[in-house]
Amino acid sequence: MTTDCRPLFRDRPDCHANRRCSGLNGGVQVNKDGRGWRVGAAADVGWIAGHTAAGVSITTAIPSVFDAYATTYQTDDVTTAAYEQALIEDLTTQTPDQPWWLAYLDTGAHDVVFTHAPRVFLYWNWPYVLVQAGPEQALAWRTGGHIRHPHGALPDLFFPADRSWLVSALWDDTWTCVGGPAPLIHTLERDPVANARQVRLDEDALPPGLVRE
Image (cartoon, rainbow, N blue to C red; front, side, top):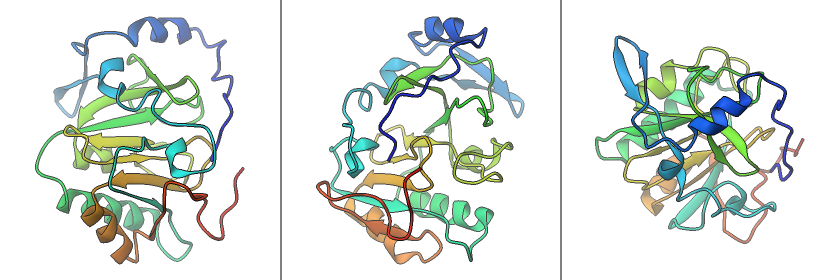
């Protein structure tokens, strides 16, 4: 997992404006698909910020507040669409109907869906666009790819309103970390397309066969 702080394109003209906006109280909305969507603020990710630790364990990406943890990644014999659909379906079947928070990491090279939305900051002061939507939008909104795949649609971090689970892929990582209830993790493990492997808090979360950048 990545453990350093990247420069995050400090010279971009909108950087300081986004910082000032990140502390807003959640009243900001963005428009898409004919409706308004709530933009998240620092308070909405306060349970994550400052509650992860640098290292190689799952807690680099996921706070140690869940019953079980796993890593998941797309294998070569599965299409990106099939993999992402399977992951979202498994999460949906284990989650009561509610909004999801979708967070897109602003690397400067990948689609964040809402370019001018305020940012929240997580991990090593990385900026994310955070919007409250749902599983359908998680599969449809992003069109410019992400770090894990140039044709991928999934947000880089997302979780339901009740915070019962968290999915997070760190900068440069080709895999995704998950924390949640044991039944959810077992569901992911049983799904060959989701390709998940349960991990302990004290072990290296790097999936077998993959390497760190």
